[in-house]
Length: 113
Length: 113
View 1 (cartoon, rainbow over the protein chains, first blue to last red):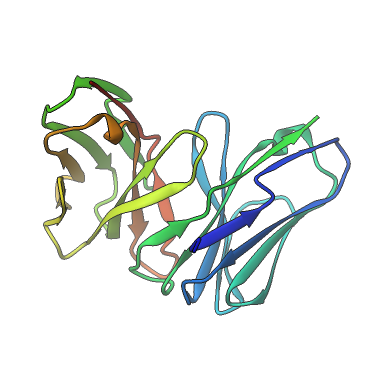
View 2 (tube, rainbow over the protein chains, first blue to last red):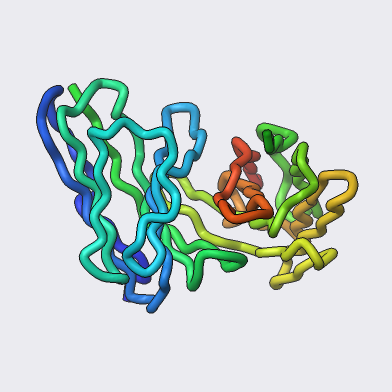
């Protein structure tokens, strides 16, 4: 069974569209994260949720809105997509917020044309 | 501001060789340090997590050390195999309330049969 899963794996869309990426973890973890990996392979935290509560919200445009319906799910909705949003987006989870290893999903490659 | 540097950026070795990957960080006030592996087009796999109070962690052929005072960690891979070929990423978790991970850019390792 996949521990952290994301859908879709690939997403190609045009500028201005709105899209969502879904993430689910079956590890029973309390904390979930969204990361962005750009073309230079640099990983940057975007958001983290702990027990459905937003903990970290980095300097991310408000076009990005995370939603956590329950502890096992953290979805990412992006409005008015821009070319610069093209990247690989990774979801991750950890047992708790502090001091525990993070487990990553396979990533969603978003291409905005 | 915490910065994480990994040297070398790329490394190519013959199969069977023992090797060391380096990670340095500028602020010694860390909570823990994690080593990850990323295979092309895939997500990240957590390899080892070292808490700030620990000096090293071992898992199979992997051994990670941590020297907080000098701001360094090393990942030692014994008897390398072609299957070890991947990008190895180091990430440090800040001490304090916001314990987000700060990432290095990784070392791309190729093990030649």
